[in-house]
Every structure is written in C-alpha cells, then in structure tokens.
Image (tube, rainbow, N blue to C red; front, side, top):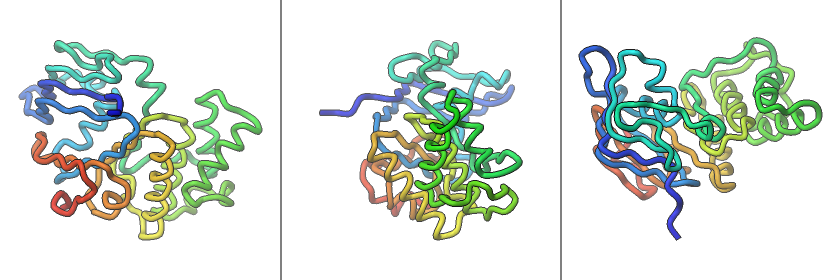
Length: 241
C-alpha cells in the first residue's frame, strides 16, 4: 500500500524581494508520510527555503515575498492561488530546527521544560518526556548542566531533544549535524533512525554523506531553486557536495 501524501506542490514558485528573483521553482513534488527525506545541494540552492515553507514560516513573515501555484499539507492549502494560510494541523504536527538553534539560558532541563510547558505537560509527565528525549540523543544524566558548558555537538543534540520532546509528527531539520563531532553525528543519526521507525516523518538538509547514508530513504538534489535529481534510494554518493 502506498504511503499517504504528506506534502504536495504543483506549479509552485516562490520569490524573495522586489525583483522577484526565484528562490524555488517546483513543477511537482510529493512527500510521503512516515519516511525520511534528505535535501541536498549547494548553499543557496533552496533547501532551507523549502523546509521553512513546509513549516509555514514563509511567506507570511515576508511582505516582499511572491508565490504562485500550490503547496498543500495533508490536502489543506498552505499556498494556493497567490494566497497563503496556516492550517492549525500544520502547527500541531510539524516542528522546524534551525541549523544554528537558539538555546535558552540556564540548564539543559530548562530547555526541555520550556517545550513541555508549551505542550501543556507538567510535573512527573514532563520529567518523563524530557528524560526520554535526552536519553535518545545520548544526553541522559546531564539535565542540570548549563548551556554554556555544552560542546557544539552536545548543543545540536540538545536542540534535537527539544524537537523530539515537542511530540511533532513531522521533523523539519536544517543541517541537524552542523557543528557536531563524529560521536554526536552518530548519536543524532541513531535518534532520527528511531524516530522514523516509530512513524515520524523526517525531512532534513545535509551536505555530508554520513547522515544521508545512515537514514535517508529518498534524496532530493536542489540546484538554484530547482530539483536537479530525485533518488528514491539510499545511494546518495552523487548528490553530496
């Protein structure tokens, strides 16, 4: 049985600025529920723009944005006919992680507690959710450490733990292994692999091949805002820069 369509794009065009230089031009694209998709390509090729669009972060925050065509989430229009909307289901179901995520001041526990409170989870349940998320990324036992005491790789793993604790069904990750050492990259790959096994959809951008080889079921290559290749397999060798 084919997986349900999560996102669909048709004759979609997105531009920034008064000059309307195309940031994305996608004639057709469908992304399935419960899979792991890697977006690859040079800097500025459109990967981050697409991830933000899929989370509903664009174009609402850009007065100079221009878009046409259709972008749908589970059949509901995010962009259609030159108008944009933000379906409540999108906000409930998706979360976006920046390449260089912002950490709250204070402890690791405070960063997780913030996410739990946003979900309306408190007390013992919040402690359980936080502990499970930290364990999944290999940060169990460090909940009281301060953010300034974390390495670059540990910071990335904490950011991923927050994403996991959000309970989102769709993870949109911009370079999730950025600034991470080999050990942290392996732990991030393992955590994301477990999330995919539980039915979570993971869509991430990457430059190196390690994470792609480890977890991606599909690799989409971008070049200057257009899709230059769409693999469908785990062989990503020719798609990495």
